[in-house]
Length: 42
Image 1 (cartoon, one colour):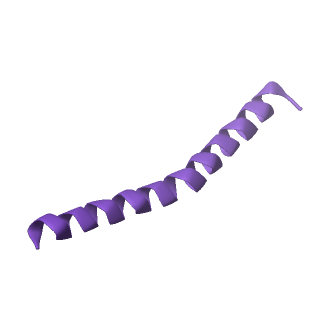
Image 2 (image 1 turned 120 degrees about the horizontal axis):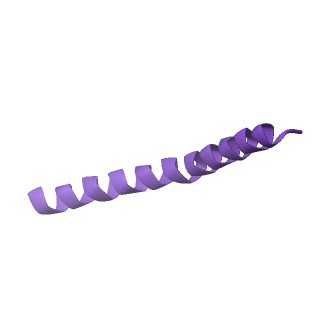
């Protein structure tokens, strides 16, 4: 396997890892902001 192939494999793993972590994180932030707005705006 070449170095370029290894680099692209690592890049794919990084993107997948950030996606797996980022989507639930973004959903949690969204729900927190939504709840805070409901709390302060009535």
